Length: 56
Picture 1 (cartoon, one colour):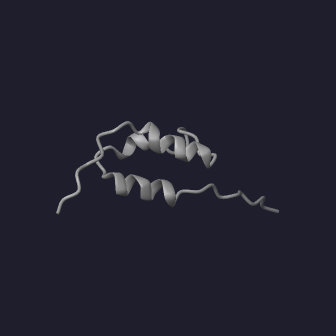
Picture 2: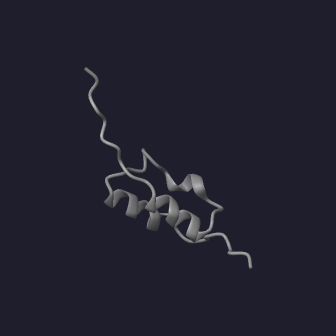
Picture 3: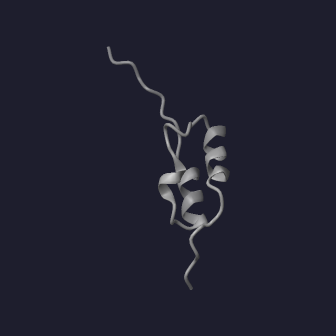
């Protein structure tokens, strides 16, 4: 069974990223057009901000 590509508005996923503090400049979900909804949600779920450690 083939899962169809997501044909909705990417703002749904972009908003979830923004709630995590990830801006569109950091990760633009429009780059992932053609993936399934499951694949897009997986990207959102596994994306996080990493705190930068100052080098001494």
